[in-house]
Length: 175
Length: 280
Image (tube, rainbow over all chains, first blue to last red):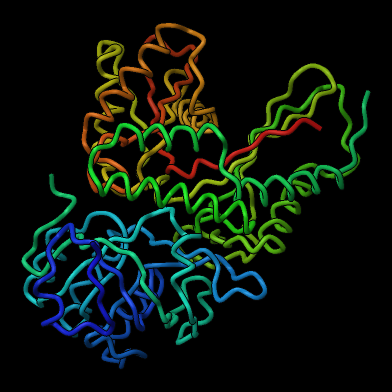
């Protein structure tokens, strides 16, 4: 049975989740992948204010295909998360609750997840057409010049994910 | 002599890329279903079921299987008695451009790898490998390659003393290190022999082979079977969440090489191994 969770997630919603649990996410989340993360990182390091407040928020690592006319969004599966490892601890320290992607994270990210009581979800890579059915609304937020890498806000309903790294640092990929 | 219009090539390439992005081959579907029959874990079964459902949705709605619609790669066999009425490379790139724009495919190519990284906004340029053959044939094998799996690929120059064991070790180490990242169950393309770049091109072409194909040379066919079995014993499983279906197939291409080397390239492709061939 899948655990139903509502976004944004509070830390107390996260602490009982265990690596390997199936979850269905509903609510609002932000998208960001390589280029948007680099901009967040550079802005913070330059003392500028980030265009979004990530506290209690969820970031989905995705760069969707364009929507066909009449569709909310095009196929939108997860991208490999390790490429965001350099930037994730900074965002977690700023209060980010959850990340959604696919594949392993490095030790620094895992430590930061534990320290901040956060969670890392895995969505199924290559199930992009199916996942797009659980995205019910798509609004641009910032960095529109980045095209598919722009930051958007999605409203999702029953988005299927697996708890990949829980708030105690248990990692579904470590066998 | 036979004349082919550049316009016909453009239209063919456009149709190929739209169709291959939305429709997976029957060999991959069969391999995913075979995986479903051997898996025991509920998670592994659930992932494979989601992938099969995903591919059905993509086909029925004519939307891409994966949001990473990749870089466009073409292997072209070009007859020496063929005349193209127009510019071949431009026709191919225009076909790719129109496919990615009109077909609602993601544009994932940046113009400069290091400095500007500015999106070309039409997914060009395509990567075109051309081989001149005798006759009037024009055969195009096209595929799109996502980079979640491309990033997990490797090349190594082995000493001849490493032998077949060295080849096996390198392939298995590459797959083990890739783990959950390249969207397993994967297709493994291996190029052995030739030169540094030839091995990599062979490995790429091997990923465009059918998942149910057998190597014509029994020694390499046996090597493919052994590698596939060992990969599936690693426990990576569908989506890297554990299971028995870590790879759908291993395809090997080989070529004569230098007395001093065994070049090996391992090109990893995700379960959405999207490619199609057409003869004009």
